[in-house]
Length: 437
Image (cartoon, rainbow, N blue to C red; front, side, top):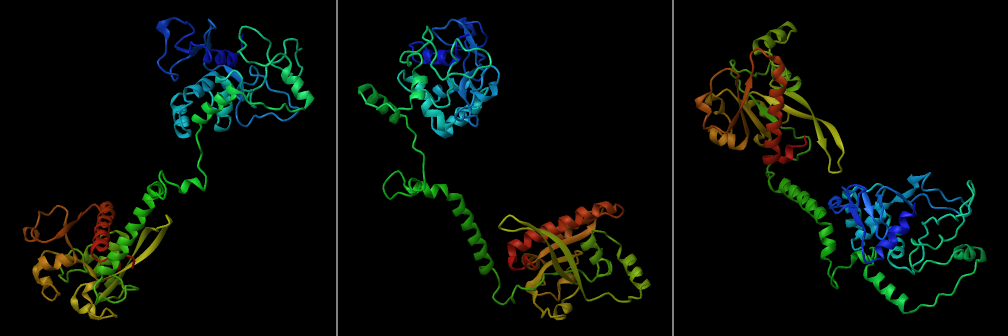
């Protein structure tokens, strides 16, 4: 069978270009609309169609020959050579840049990887110009008198119908290799025209000097566009820092070790009291207040603490992308009097949440006795049983409802997770200086 690469070269240099087919039959009805779905290529003037996956004599990257090495055989080692469709695609995409060249190669579903950018110019010049030298990765055809098992001789193929015009005479390459002499190159008019065509299709790669130059002199808009995303992230960080400094009250103490405070109702009928709040918020397990009180009495504890610390594990993502687990600390109190104890100093700015039972008398000693004003400055949470009807008294209050199931303890975890999620969002928006404590 004739060499596929020589047939392709002769077809590209002839007036009739190759034809894509859906089957070996060269009938016009079997013409394929694209290289991706074609199975064969008809290369005029040859009347027979060749499979597009037929191996050529063009070596793939990583299989370059060293001096004295026996060239591989495309029939025995087809994986070392580019296929016919890869070389034909090189001609189809001769005007594309590097990015479009490889992107379209994936869409073309080539049987072998596309020809690399290093070999692209030399192979394309050899395909289009009869006087162009053979690319370094092209394995020459063996001589017809070569016996099986012998090494391939580096000579040109014999003259014949498939030999393109401008090919070197028989034995020229071998004689040039053995002589070791370099022929002086004398350019002529045909060479100059070929160089002009080559420079017209040349793609200039960027380096460290040219990447800083815009389309016009002293125009760096292209560089600014490439780092636009970094500038946007930097502005967002600056906005967060400014927000932390602008919205923090001037009278608030230093945010270091200033842990947030959660206030609950002191009513004995409340679902969340000082007896069961720690177990509920830390372990996500609801225990009735009376049951928790009896358990404390059995341990000799007759009175609940005025201030209860609650610890919570949080997963924090740092600006560097590192994920860390931190332990957050909150204080729970059931009255304004406790704010003056244990170093709180009566600071209402550290109060981030109030758990209410819907009774307005709970807010009389607070800084904001009016529920509407109170829940404008702190996060409001109304706690009720899951099956109780809605409370009309809180419909005008800015509070979220926390429903505790009476019998299903496995849903307590999702209820507590919802509470912490809403509280974190509120603190990050209204009191960000307490968000990391």
